Length: 465
Image 1: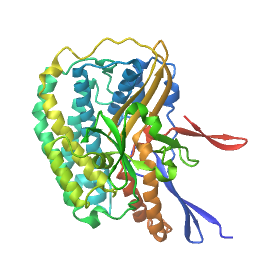
Image 2: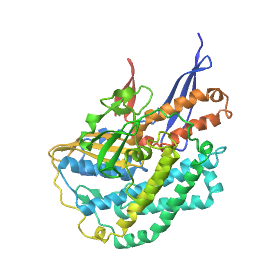
Image 3: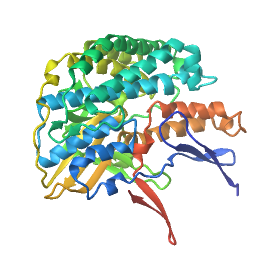
């Protein structure tokens, strides 16, 4: 009997959090390949129980420093849903603008510093390559990220972990000076966003360089928010789209548990969500920029719509299956975020004193949903008569993509197995090829871990966190 050899590649680089790729090889053949999230859970769903629900928006956002804006907003929406609260129109506009700032910051970080090295310096893909080969773009990327963070600070009080979203609205209106400064800087930010997007489209036209058609294109379903078919990053109905691009169904956030279930895996601290009535085998789906463009009938802004039309033409129509499409979709979302943010920065009603209403805690059950940069994010809270959290469930974007990511890795491992079996450093080019597929999804692993492995005298068991 041939012994099975375990080969592990750790860590997977240029993504948030800790993961590894493990291969089991026997007789020169690949027996098993797993993409393993190995980071321990943060246990937020448990330690938030017993605290006042109005504290949840500031507690839950500590799950991650990159996704903090979206957790902050999904959380406050869940509290309001549980308590039957409708925030002021001005408060909702301010939150919408804050969310756009988070997108500009997060997407730019990935596009310029995490993903771009794979395409402008494939032989030596590291962040310094951006500074060496695209020095002007490297500087402009820093400035564009800062612009997004300035929006977050102007509304949320801090660039990271904002603190002003409260049940009923926001704590403060937008300051006049902040609005004036940001509006002045916005045209340069838009020019930078378009330059980044144009660069990615230029790179993608070289299909070999951009690795189009290099990864498994297994059909999946797609999930995203929309407003009557229009792409939306903050609110609306949820839509599942079939692998052929046709609509499966629309549903409300409050009903998400009727449509989504999760399965725990024995080798991974992330649970695998799937479409409940289709089951784990047929119900796999993806979220995030690529999914959102596949779900939406059109973009909400004209420049982004023009790019979206080029996007679908480049990949041969709807839906786009190729994981490399995530990069272009992400760039398009930076453009639409700026197109949406500029008129809001010029809206003087955001500076008026009508930013919140008084709220009384009460018993209830509510779901808050918004689109995180990495995909659809759910916060689900139950409170008692005193407004204390008694149950918390958080379903994050990265968890919804892990299953597809693993399948990309498995297919590439089968293809490149002879290279992967070579000693270091001769195997690293093949390892990098697997990592490129993972990075396309811009994983946020810290958000995603929701199971914990416990060793007992009866063996190892997995428990929800």
